[in-house]
Length: 449
Image: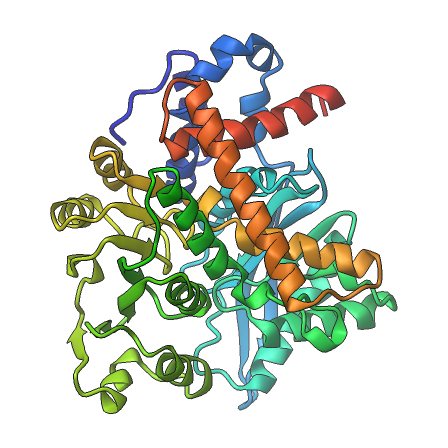
């Protein structure tokens, strides 16, 4: 962590380190926000007096519980699950559930902390939270995943509600898992409370464009950053890390806006296709056949697969990290800058290390942090909640239009806030301060709770 904190903020960060030992991702997320808030305390000293920052850094509630379940052969497994209800100043806790072996409390707290500001930036009435489990759905049968989800929800249901806490999907949690979770919630509570989970199937309360929203939103934000510089995505070469939901729909929208995406990746390696990736082939491999990305070369002999390759070594105009946290380090950032990259927008949560962020900002390229650039997913989840509350269903085109309007407004607010605080073009500062002020003002209005 290279940026020195304001003297009023350093003791706050040291307290976070002391109270949350071993949670490195959470420490990183907190530092990244605190390093931009010095000017806010000068302009609004009442937030320091009321200890708003200290209160934001401490979750309102942290729930940890065991999840026992039985596999198809009868063996019993015990996983650990979490729900961190971080901040409800703006609305019910809102944030996804992640199923992945890497999940522990520090990851969930980092994601939940980011979610507070991301959700605030949408301008919609949603607070911040996150959850998950160290359960690995890979290689498990549908029945095993169903039993795990039912066991998890048997404990979690008591903490949820459409006006309390509304989970969604994340890594390892898609439509199948949301279905099992919602079914168990409905069974236990005897209520068809559609708004308690988002990312549902279209036939039972889901929102059109929710699947596409995070990837689409990231590209909308990228396009706005370039427009602010008198440029556009048209004709740009793009690389996208990952090949899951966010990456696939980022590729789709980038193509629609005239860009050419030439590379993507998975945990095994990278595919480079200079003619432009064939999205139909990619979707069949990843969404239908659930194979490794290396299979792409079976259908396109002119594409190149590099096992264990680094996607950030591929020269491009625009880079979209859409895989996982800390996937783009300082060395990668230097390579992108040296190869002429002009814009980076984060489709994943905190995919760039602090050193990488410093390099991008010093190079003055357009850098959109995840809490702004990938807010389209949670924004569309909030739109799903609106539809559920009104017992309504909107068309794909209308929902996508609302999403685009929200992303344009997020960009505008981040851009204007950065300029107001003397850092024009610094979307990290703009996003952090704009999101923080929305939450801080609400907390200040509600008293010490």
